[in-house]
Every structure is written in structure tokens, then in C-alpha cells.
Image (cartoon, rainbow over all chains, first blue to last red; front, top):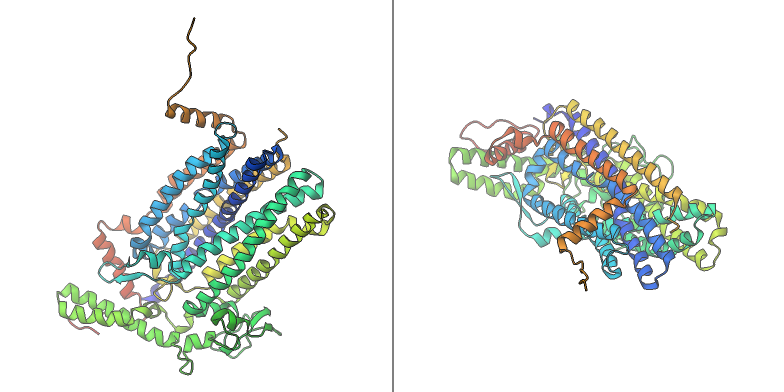
Length: 512
Length: 90
């Protein structure tokens, strides 16, 4: 019975997963992103033969190596948590993700073990061509190693290409291509990798700006900036485009998430995108309080355009998505909860009939279950209002991500413009801003994951499995203990990374 | 006249030397490898071994038992669940 569930445990398990994923995500985007930038630096060195480009390439390679070494295997802890804290979920999706994730891990390990060594140890010891090839393969391998975990995440947001087996309680893959190439999966991968390249570029710009402000390694810093800013600009524009495409898909599959992003409680035609607003913490879907404290500034029609590719179109609000709307043909959480409860009851009856050996009754119950299985997850909600994610956190994270995402291309343009005007060293304001852009990039990246993961609550698998059922029935104290252990472990790793990185940045590129 | 000996070591020997010399020439890398080994030890020998058992793997012997347990979680965790009377289905 849901009343007997320890919700404290669920929230601690969620907090632990968030903590692990967020720490993991401090290392990953830099690894994915800067590997491409280093490949470009290395290519320029091979084509020009210039020792300055070699020195520059080796310097960024060293910082890449530090980040990679500290961050390596931090993601494995997420898998530990699946088996211990989220055992029901793990069991249910094991058929879909178990093998591909294992294969991906092995392939990534061998690509990285081989080409990493050549990239770092290969200077003057292998041919220039093979050395350069290895550097590109490190970039390719690192980014490919993110494919399946992102496909898995996309599938949780939009569980396509599967069928639920009521005998084994497992989702079974029906179409590999539908899973791997769903628009959610494609957007998730392209958005993540382009964001990572942008963050890699911001990292280069931050450190190079710091050098320029101090008048150190000036030529290296200026050359690094030109390439990083050019790649960062392309990546940031691509990020905006595929981010917009992701929002369009979310509007179709996760309309509640989109409504939470915008604090949209009442559905609207010609719905505006909030440019500025402070979410009212007392606003609930069932009360009449205003959605925002004070005035909110909207850009008319932009949310409708984002959601439906049409300015005048209708975007449902949280209220319609909870209580339904006959006018707009929207099935709300209230109606879906009733259908979900039927699905749960039919599943139970199917199981009882199978145990009793009553095949005819089992068939009838299975057919009834299949009619309503799309609403299964709603059957576990104690009340329909539980279908609403944390609105303030989703709203704030979304707007921080969007504002920063729009700022970065302007920063890249500024750096390119003043680089070509040969006046970058004199633009102290830009260099000052540039020095902190990496931190801003990390904030945007973390906000992006909060948007993706908090916005889809209460679901572990969209509409099918809420987090309260996905969990293992452990005590809160057990999860709290490991939460704090991880907090200490990851904080120590982060301190180690920062110390080693800062030391190497202070030393700068080798003179010989 | 003494024939000059040409040095063409086996591929595996060359790979071994490549890694060996690479590791020897590492500077920052030595500290990083230490961090990696300590981290992996803490993760696998401490955390995984003592704090993160696979719940279903340790509690049940067979996949059939695991499936039964999860199905039970799926069917009995719904709010308002009432144990059906034997032989009756909703």
C-alpha cells in the first residue's frame, strides 16, 4: 500500500542519484568537448609544423588528461545505485539497456585505452599521421561512449519501441531503431555533445583570458582563443537549434514538463514565453493564487511557436493536464489515474488467473490491461496533483539555461571580433567576463539536467512508472549513509582536480 | 667483418616498450594514476562490496522469483489496492 511506503527513502535516493549525476557531469562535458578542440589544435600543428601549435596542443592535452583521470568511472556509481536503490526499475528495463550499455563500456574502454596511450605517449614515437588519427579517435570514442546512456535517458522520457511483458515484469525491446533513433534520443545526443563542445570552448577561453589579463603566454592564449571561439560559436548555435527541437518534442510527449518550464497553469492560445518572472511558491494547481509574484514579462506567441510551430496555437497548462479539458480534448491526470488503476487491477487479476491456471480469464484480463497500459503509471499516484513536477525549480533551471545559452554565442562573437581587430588584449571587460565563462557554462549544463530530470517528475519512465514504484524498499538511513559517503568522495575528487588543474595552469605550457 | 645487428623487435615487444617508456616519462600522470587506483579501490572494494549490493540478485535465487517480486510490487503498491477474493477478478 502506498501509505506504507517510505517516501523519505525515495527522496533520499533521488537526491543521491542527482548528487552523483551532477558531480559526474562536472567532468564529462569537458572531456567530450575539449577532445574535439584538441583534435583541431593537433591538426593545425600537423599541417603547419609550427612548434608553437605543438606546445599549445600538449598543454591542453595535459589539462584534458587531468580532467579525464579524475572523472573516469564516476558514472559507474550510477549503476551501483540502480541495483541497490532502484531495483524494480533496473529489473524492468534490464532487457532494453543491460547488454548495449555493457558493450558500449567495453568498446569505449578499448578505444580509449588504445588511442589515449598513443595520443599522450606518441609524440616523436609514432608517425605524425597516426598520432593525429589517435587524437581524433579519442574525441570520437569519448563522444560515442555517451551514446547509449543518453539513448537510455531519452527512452525514459519517451518509452518507444518496447512492449511490457506482464509475466516477467520487464519492458522488452521491439524495435532497436525506434529506441536508438527516436527524436528524443537524437536530440538528447546532439544537444549533449554540442553543449559539451561549447563548454570545452568556454574552458579554453576562461584559462586563455586569465593568461591574457596577466600578460602570460600571450601568443598561445590568442591562438587557443581563435580556434575555441570559432568552434564554440558553431556549437552554441547548434545547441540553440537542437534545444528548440527538443522543446518541440517535449511539447508533444511531456506537455506537463513544458508547462512547468513556463509556470503555465492555465492553457493559452498564442502563449507567451516568460522573459522575466518570479514563480509564486504558494501557487498550487488547485488554488487561485497568481502563478507569479509581481508582474511577469512575456514574449507573445513564442511558447506556442516553440511547442507547435505556430504562433496562434494552443498550449495546455498544468490545470488542464491535471483535471482534463473536453474543449481541447485533453485527458487529464484525473481521468488517466482511473484508467491506470484499471490497468493495475487487470495486471493483478491476470497474475491471479495465471496462478490459478485459468488461461481464459488470464487472456481476458491481459486484453483489458493492454487497453489501458499507456496510463499504468497514473494508477500509482495517490492523487492526480502528484503528476505535477516541482514548478519553481523547473522554471528557474529552464530560464537560467536559456539565458546563458543565448549569452554564450554573443561572447564567442565578441572574442572572434576583437581577435580579428587585433585588440583583444585591450578589452579587459571581455577578458574578465571570459575568465568566468567556464563556470557559467557548467551552471548552464547542470541547469539543463535539472530541466530534463526534475521536469519529468514524478516519472522514472514517462507515464508508466513513477519513482515511488521504481525504488527498492530500503530504509531511509541506509540511503542517507551512502549519500554522505558519496558527498565526501566526490568533493575530495573535485578538490583534487581543482588543485592539480590550477597547479598546471599556473605552470603553463612547457617551454621546450 | 662483423655483420651489424639490426634491431627489429616483435610487435608485442614494441607495444610493451611504448607503454613502458610512456609511463616512465609521465610527470602529472603519476599522481593521476594514484588517484585513479585509490578511487577504484574505494568504489569497488568498499562501496560496491559493502554498501551497494544488487538487491534482487542478493534476495532471490532465480529470475522467476525476481519477476514475481517485482510484479507484486507493481500490483500491490497502487493506492486503494484490495486483495481480491480467491477466484474473483475485477
